[in-house]
Length: 83
Image (cartoon, rainbow, N blue to C red; front, side, top):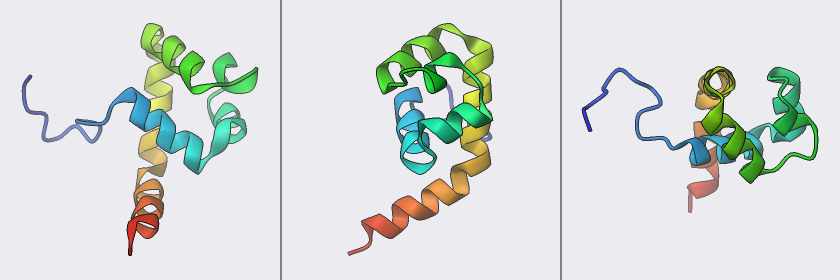
């Protein structure tokens, strides 16, 4: 695998990205931001992963949503990890 120093998503799996978004925004807000059925109708992590792995345009929108909120997600995670 080649290095991707300028890719902000390098090293972040789709599952980790979704888990962070679900924890930070929840499915309802994610569905409002990215109107895809796997977020708005009976949402689950597994159904979202399955759909996003097959549908490039939706994955790009979800990755953009993650990048939009990445700083806040990282800050929230660091607060919970402090002793």
